[in-house]
Image 1: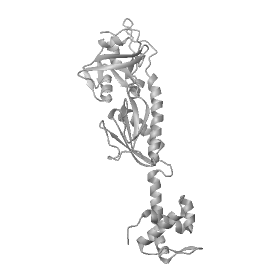
Image 2: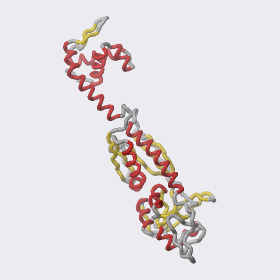
Image 3: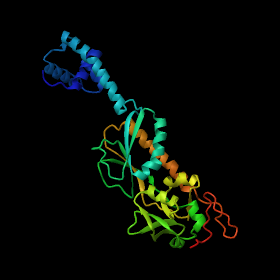
Image 4: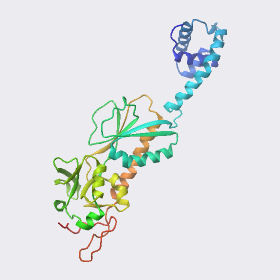
Length: 334
């Protein structure tokens, strides 16, 4: 017996159950000759005739009847398993492996995954958080979130889901002790926590009322992870430039306050990447669309959260800043 093509076995089952080559061909949308050649190829591999053919009829032989009894349940089981894996029924299911940078993964993405798991209970989500560049195909990862100004060309399908807008924040304790800057120049008199600084120096390029302004800032505390920068700002380390969607929970609970709210940074964007394929699994498309929707909603909320409406601490009245009430009408104290 020669090697058997499982596609030919599946065609045999279809011909057997439909009672003819032409009917099976119509079901599959292929020429009748394609079906006929597949059955002949299978018979040659098995060394047995499966159908008795005539100009008027097609009927299974004894070997054909026996073969159908043996293989039909297995073919049905394989087809059922395939539908579960590739989303043929368009219902998301199976294990979904997602990778993202540590800071994005432990803040924005963690909340999104929990919400997605509630919406799609048949999908098991596994998060791989790392700042290294993961090879999706070699490491069996379904989808990646990456933050960058621009993604390099690759064989992966890439979708930009939106700008990663960043604002200036400080802890409530810090602004009560040191005041708040009224202008960008006032930043020189404040402590700063910097992201990926070079020898304690960084350039903040901010959009404001007068357009885009670049300012060189210095700081005694620096880090290469936004989670660290956020934590250092929460600890009172100074003013930090933090992605709004990452700072939003702390702003909502009054742990961080936004300063110089008329200024923001949009130097990077969030991208979604996944391997190219003729058929994208339903679990991947469902998660991709959910992330796009969630990011837009959270970014819109975070962009206005912490935009102050009250007044800051008044030296004479000694009124402390409450929650996110930070005014820029007063210059910073040294």
